[in-house]
Length: 298
Ligand SMILES: Nc1nc2c(c(=O)[nH]1)N[C@H]1C(S)=C(S)[C@@H](COP(=O)(O)O)O[C@H]1N2
Ligand SMILES: [Mo]
Image (tube, rainbow, N blue to C red):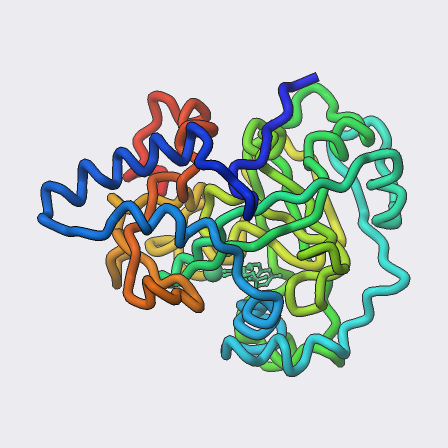
Protein backbone atom coordinates (compact mmCIF):
# COMPACT_ATOMS: atom_id res chain seq x y z
CA UNK A 1 0.00 0.00 0.00
CA UNK A 2 1.36 3.39 -1.00
CA UNK A 3 2.33 5.73 1.79
CA UNK A 4 -0.57 7.97 2.69
CA UNK A 5 -0.10 11.64 2.12
CA UNK A 6 -0.82 13.70 5.20
CA UNK A 7 -2.61 16.98 4.91
CA UNK A 8 -0.32 20.01 5.02
CA UNK A 9 -3.03 22.64 5.20
CA UNK A 10 -5.16 22.38 8.33
CA UNK A 11 -6.33 25.54 10.05
CA UNK A 12 -4.52 24.54 13.23
CA UNK A 13 -1.43 23.86 11.19
CA UNK A 14 2.01 24.54 12.58
CA UNK A 15 3.89 25.13 9.34
CA UNK A 16 5.00 21.63 8.36
CA UNK A 17 8.11 21.08 6.36
CA UNK A 18 6.76 21.28 2.80
CA UNK A 19 5.23 24.68 3.46
CA UNK A 20 8.28 25.88 5.31
CA UNK A 21 10.41 24.91 2.33
CA UNK A 22 8.09 26.76 -0.06
CA UNK A 23 8.17 29.80 2.14
CA UNK A 24 11.95 29.82 2.11
CA UNK A 25 11.87 29.72 -1.69
CA UNK A 26 9.38 32.58 -1.79
CA UNK A 27 11.46 34.58 0.68
CA UNK A 28 14.57 34.04 -1.41
CA UNK A 29 12.73 35.16 -4.54
CA UNK A 30 11.11 38.15 -2.85
CA UNK A 31 14.36 39.34 -1.33
CA UNK A 32 15.76 39.67 -4.82
CA UNK A 33 12.79 41.83 -5.82
CA UNK A 34 13.06 43.99 -2.71
CA UNK A 35 9.57 43.00 -1.52
CA UNK A 36 8.60 42.99 2.13
CA UNK A 37 5.85 41.40 4.24
CA UNK A 38 6.29 38.06 2.51
CA UNK A 39 6.36 35.87 5.64
CA UNK A 40 2.68 36.61 6.24
CA UNK A 41 1.85 35.24 2.82
CA UNK A 42 2.32 31.64 3.82
CA UNK A 43 -0.12 32.13 6.69
CA UNK A 44 -2.65 33.91 4.47
CA UNK A 45 -2.61 31.21 1.82
CA UNK A 46 -3.53 28.49 4.33
CA UNK A 47 -6.80 30.12 5.26
CA UNK A 48 -9.60 28.16 3.55
CA UNK A 49 -12.21 30.14 1.65
CA UNK A 50 -15.70 30.32 3.10
CA UNK A 51 -18.45 28.00 1.89
CA UNK A 52 -20.18 31.14 0.65
CA UNK A 53 -17.22 31.99 -1.61
CA UNK A 54 -16.71 28.39 -2.73
CA UNK A 55 -20.36 28.02 -3.77
CA UNK A 56 -20.82 31.35 -5.51
CA UNK A 57 -17.74 31.78 -7.71
CA UNK A 58 -17.52 28.79 -10.01
CA UNK A 59 -16.54 27.49 -13.40
CA UNK A 60 -19.02 24.93 -14.69
CA UNK A 61 -19.50 25.74 -18.35
CA UNK A 62 -22.43 23.37 -18.70
CA UNK A 63 -24.35 26.08 -16.82
CA UNK A 64 -22.83 29.07 -18.62
CA UNK A 65 -19.67 31.20 -18.78
CA UNK A 66 -20.32 33.56 -15.92
CA UNK A 67 -18.89 32.76 -12.47
CA UNK A 68 -22.39 33.16 -11.01
CA UNK A 69 -24.18 30.98 -13.61
CA UNK A 70 -23.47 27.65 -11.85
CA UNK A 71 -24.90 28.81 -8.51
CA UNK A 72 -27.93 30.17 -10.35
CA UNK A 73 -28.71 27.13 -12.49
CA UNK A 74 -27.05 24.00 -11.03
CA UNK A 75 -29.88 23.33 -8.58
CA UNK A 76 -31.84 21.86 -11.51
CA UNK A 77 -29.23 19.16 -12.20
CA UNK A 78 -30.49 15.71 -11.16
CA UNK A 79 -27.89 13.99 -8.95
CA UNK A 80 -29.97 11.10 -7.62
CA UNK A 81 -29.95 8.34 -8.65
CA UNK A 82 -26.42 8.60 -10.05
CA UNK A 83 -24.46 6.05 -11.99
CA UNK A 84 -20.78 6.01 -12.87
CA UNK A 85 -19.83 3.75 -15.74
CA UNK A 86 -16.43 2.17 -15.16
CA UNK A 87 -15.04 0.61 -18.30
CA UNK A 88 -12.01 -0.02 -20.47
CA UNK A 89 -8.98 -1.85 -19.07
CA UNK A 90 -10.49 -2.82 -15.70
CA UNK A 91 -11.07 -6.16 -13.99
CA UNK A 92 -14.56 -5.28 -12.79
CA UNK A 93 -16.26 -2.98 -15.29
CA UNK A 94 -19.82 -1.93 -14.58
CA UNK A 95 -22.30 0.75 -13.65
CA UNK A 96 -21.66 1.80 -10.07
CA UNK A 97 -23.48 4.08 -7.66
CA UNK A 98 -21.06 6.51 -5.95
CA UNK A 99 -21.73 4.75 -2.63
CA UNK A 100 -20.55 1.47 -4.13
CA UNK A 101 -17.27 2.99 -5.27
CA UNK A 102 -16.77 4.56 -1.84
CA UNK A 103 -17.91 1.63 0.31
CA UNK A 104 -15.35 0.70 2.94
CA UNK A 105 -13.14 3.71 2.20
CA UNK A 106 -12.57 6.40 4.77
CA UNK A 107 -13.57 9.87 3.62
CA UNK A 108 -10.75 12.25 4.53
CA UNK A 109 -10.46 16.01 4.63
CA UNK A 110 -7.92 17.50 2.22
CA UNK A 111 -7.37 21.25 2.33
CA UNK A 112 -5.97 22.05 -1.11
CA UNK A 113 -5.21 25.14 -3.13
CA UNK A 114 -7.27 25.36 -6.33
CA UNK A 115 -5.57 27.44 -9.02
CA UNK A 116 -7.67 28.25 -12.09
CA UNK A 117 -5.81 28.67 -15.37
CA UNK A 118 -7.55 32.06 -15.63
CA UNK A 119 -5.42 33.39 -12.76
CA UNK A 120 -7.64 33.20 -9.66
CA UNK A 121 -7.38 30.78 -6.76
CA UNK A 122 -9.03 29.52 -3.59
CA UNK A 123 -8.21 27.18 -0.73
CA UNK A 124 -10.87 24.48 -0.39
CA UNK A 125 -11.36 21.92 2.40
CA UNK A 126 -12.52 18.92 0.38
CA UNK A 127 -13.88 15.65 1.72
CA UNK A 128 -13.06 12.66 -0.40
CA UNK A 129 -11.14 9.48 -1.02
CA UNK A 130 -7.98 8.76 -2.93
CA UNK A 131 -8.73 7.87 -6.53
CA UNK A 132 -6.08 5.13 -6.21
CA UNK A 133 -8.25 3.31 -3.67
CA UNK A 134 -11.27 3.42 -5.98
CA UNK A 135 -9.18 2.20 -8.93
CA UNK A 136 -7.86 -0.63 -6.76
CA UNK A 137 -11.47 -1.70 -6.12
CA UNK A 138 -12.34 -1.97 -9.80
CA UNK A 139 -8.93 -3.44 -10.65
CA UNK A 140 -6.61 -1.81 -13.20
CA UNK A 141 -5.62 -4.23 -15.93
CA UNK A 142 -2.21 -4.55 -17.54
CA UNK A 143 -1.84 -2.19 -20.46
CA UNK A 144 -3.82 0.67 -18.87
CA UNK A 145 -1.76 3.87 -19.06
CA UNK A 146 -4.36 6.62 -18.75
CA UNK A 147 -7.64 7.33 -16.98
CA UNK A 148 -10.40 9.21 -18.83
CA UNK A 149 -13.31 10.99 -17.13
CA UNK A 150 -16.63 12.30 -18.42
CA UNK A 151 -19.23 14.69 -16.95
CA UNK A 152 -22.99 14.26 -17.06
CA UNK A 153 -24.94 16.01 -19.83
CA UNK A 154 -28.41 17.21 -18.82
CA UNK A 155 -29.58 19.68 -21.49
CA UNK A 156 -32.85 20.52 -19.70
CA UNK A 157 -30.92 21.68 -16.64
CA UNK A 158 -27.85 23.08 -18.41
CA UNK A 159 -28.15 26.33 -20.37
CA UNK A 160 -24.50 26.13 -21.45
CA UNK A 161 -25.10 22.70 -22.97
CA UNK A 162 -28.16 23.96 -24.84
CA UNK A 163 -26.13 26.89 -26.20
CA UNK A 164 -23.17 24.56 -26.94
CA UNK A 165 -20.63 26.91 -25.34
CA UNK A 166 -18.18 23.96 -25.48
CA UNK A 167 -18.20 20.52 -27.07
CA UNK A 168 -19.95 18.48 -24.36
CA UNK A 169 -19.69 16.08 -22.60
CA UNK A 170 -16.81 17.70 -20.71
CA UNK A 171 -13.87 15.29 -20.92
CA UNK A 172 -10.70 15.07 -18.86
CA UNK A 173 -7.86 12.64 -18.39
CA UNK A 174 -4.76 11.80 -16.39
CA UNK A 175 -1.76 9.61 -16.91
CA UNK A 176 -2.18 6.49 -14.75
CA UNK A 177 0.66 7.45 -12.40
CA UNK A 178 -0.94 10.88 -11.87
CA UNK A 179 -4.28 9.22 -11.18
CA UNK A 180 -2.67 6.88 -8.63
CA UNK A 181 -0.81 9.69 -6.83
CA UNK A 182 -2.03 10.04 -3.22
CA UNK A 183 -2.84 13.74 -3.73
CA UNK A 184 -5.43 12.88 -6.40
CA UNK A 185 -8.87 12.51 -4.87
CA UNK A 186 -12.49 11.96 -5.75
CA UNK A 187 -14.36 14.54 -3.68
CA UNK A 188 -17.89 14.18 -2.37
CA UNK A 189 -18.01 17.08 0.06
CA UNK A 190 -16.64 20.42 1.24
CA UNK A 191 -16.46 21.50 4.90
CA UNK A 192 -18.16 18.24 5.86
CA UNK A 193 -21.25 19.00 3.75
CA UNK A 194 -22.19 17.20 0.56
CA UNK A 195 -20.90 18.96 -2.57
CA UNK A 196 -23.23 21.66 -3.86
CA UNK A 197 -24.27 20.89 -7.43
CA UNK A 198 -22.25 23.85 -8.70
CA UNK A 199 -19.12 22.33 -7.14
CA UNK A 200 -19.62 19.04 -9.01
CA UNK A 201 -22.10 16.90 -7.04
CA UNK A 202 -22.29 14.10 -6.36
CA UNK A 203 -18.65 13.26 -7.10
CA UNK A 204 -15.79 15.11 -8.83
CA UNK A 205 -12.08 14.84 -9.36
CA UNK A 206 -9.57 17.06 -7.53
CA UNK A 207 -5.96 17.19 -8.77
CA UNK A 208 -4.44 20.02 -6.73
CA UNK A 209 -1.16 20.50 -8.63
CA UNK A 210 -2.92 21.03 -11.97
CA UNK A 211 -4.97 23.92 -13.27
CA UNK A 212 -8.57 23.74 -12.08
CA UNK A 213 -9.98 22.62 -15.42
CA UNK A 214 -8.43 19.16 -14.90
CA UNK A 215 -10.62 18.71 -11.80
CA UNK A 216 -13.68 17.50 -13.69
CA UNK A 217 -17.09 17.76 -12.02
CA UNK A 218 -20.15 15.51 -11.74
CA UNK A 219 -18.46 12.40 -13.14
CA UNK A 220 -20.55 9.73 -14.92
CA UNK A 221 -17.79 7.74 -16.56
CA UNK A 222 -14.28 6.57 -15.68
CA UNK A 223 -12.38 4.65 -18.37
CA UNK A 224 -8.97 3.03 -18.20
CA UNK A 225 -7.26 3.38 -21.56
CA UNK A 226 -4.01 2.50 -23.31
CA UNK A 227 -3.93 5.73 -25.31
CA UNK A 228 -3.98 9.33 -24.09
CA UNK A 229 -7.66 10.35 -24.05
CA UNK A 230 -9.02 13.55 -25.63
CA UNK A 231 -9.74 16.38 -23.19
CA UNK A 232 -12.23 19.19 -23.69
CA UNK A 233 -9.97 22.21 -23.29
CA UNK A 234 -7.04 20.88 -25.28
CA UNK A 235 -9.46 19.96 -28.07
CA UNK A 236 -11.07 23.41 -27.96
CA UNK A 237 -7.82 25.36 -27.96
CA UNK A 238 -4.72 23.14 -28.27
CA UNK A 239 -2.23 26.03 -28.31
CA UNK A 240 -3.59 27.32 -25.00
CA UNK A 241 -4.43 24.21 -22.98
CA UNK A 242 -2.29 21.10 -22.89
CA UNK A 243 -3.03 17.62 -21.59
CA UNK A 244 -0.77 18.04 -18.55
CA UNK A 245 -1.85 21.50 -17.37
CA UNK A 246 0.47 21.44 -14.37
CA UNK A 247 0.44 24.73 -12.50
CA UNK A 248 3.68 26.43 -13.53
CA UNK A 249 4.49 30.09 -12.84
CA UNK A 250 7.29 29.92 -15.46
CA UNK A 251 5.11 28.86 -18.38
CA UNK A 252 2.72 31.61 -19.37
CA UNK A 253 -0.63 31.19 -21.06
CA UNK A 254 -0.32 32.62 -24.60
CA UNK A 255 -2.60 35.49 -23.56
CA UNK A 256 -1.54 36.15 -19.95
CA UNK A 257 1.16 35.55 -17.35
CA UNK A 258 0.82 32.63 -14.94
CA UNK A 259 3.39 34.02 -12.48
CA UNK A 260 0.81 35.26 -9.99
CA UNK A 261 -2.79 34.74 -8.98
CA UNK A 262 -5.69 36.54 -7.34
CA UNK A 263 -6.83 34.73 -4.20
CA UNK A 264 -10.62 35.01 -3.98
CA UNK A 265 -11.51 36.85 -0.77
CA UNK A 266 -7.81 37.62 -0.42
CA UNK A 267 -8.14 39.74 2.73
CA UNK A 268 -4.72 41.07 3.62
CA UNK A 269 -3.49 39.94 0.23
CA UNK A 270 -6.33 41.31 -1.87
CA UNK A 271 -3.71 41.98 -4.52
CA UNK A 272 -1.99 39.21 -6.42
CA UNK A 273 0.15 36.55 -4.74
CA UNK A 274 2.92 34.56 -6.43
CA UNK A 275 1.87 31.29 -8.04
CA UNK A 276 3.85 28.31 -6.75
CA UNK A 277 5.44 25.60 -8.90
CA UNK A 278 3.01 22.68 -9.13
CA UNK A 279 0.69 24.91 -7.07
CA UNK A 280 2.82 24.33 -3.97
CA UNK A 281 2.96 20.53 -4.31
CA UNK A 282 6.37 20.34 -5.95
CA UNK A 283 7.92 18.18 -3.23
CA UNK A 284 5.15 15.63 -3.72
CA UNK A 285 4.77 15.51 -7.50
CA UNK A 286 7.92 16.77 -9.27
CA UNK A 287 9.22 13.20 -9.56
CA UNK A 288 6.29 12.33 -11.85
CA UNK A 289 7.76 14.64 -14.50
CA UNK A 290 11.45 13.94 -14.16
CA UNK A 291 13.20 14.39 -17.48
CA UNK A 292 10.11 15.87 -19.14
CA UNK A 293 10.16 19.21 -20.91
CA UNK A 294 7.50 21.18 -19.01
CA UNK A 295 7.33 23.88 -21.68
CA UNK A 296 6.57 21.41 -24.42
CA UNK A 297 4.29 19.35 -22.18
CA UNK A 298 2.27 22.27 -20.84
N1 LIG B 1 -17.67 19.39 -16.00
C1 LIG B 1 -16.94 20.47 -15.73
N2 LIG B 1 -15.96 20.37 -14.81
C2 LIG B 1 -15.20 21.47 -14.52
C3 LIG B 1 -15.42 22.70 -15.20
C4 LIG B 1 -16.46 22.76 -16.16
O1 LIG B 1 -16.72 23.79 -16.80
N3 LIG B 1 -17.21 21.64 -16.39
N4 LIG B 1 -14.62 23.78 -14.91
C5 LIG B 1 -13.28 23.49 -14.36
C6 LIG B 1 -12.58 24.70 -13.94
S1 LIG B 1 -12.00 25.71 -15.17
C7 LIG B 1 -12.32 24.96 -12.62
S2 LIG B 1 -11.34 26.27 -12.19
C8 LIG B 1 -12.92 24.13 -11.54
C9 LIG B 1 -13.70 25.01 -10.58
O2 LIG B 1 -14.20 24.26 -9.50
P1 LIG B 1 -15.16 24.98 -8.44
O3 LIG B 1 -16.17 25.76 -9.20
O4 LIG B 1 -15.77 23.87 -7.64
O5 LIG B 1 -14.28 25.86 -7.59
O6 LIG B 1 -13.79 23.12 -12.05
C10 LIG B 1 -13.34 22.47 -13.23
N5 LIG B 1 -14.23 21.37 -13.55
MO1 LIG C 1 -10.42 26.93 -14.21
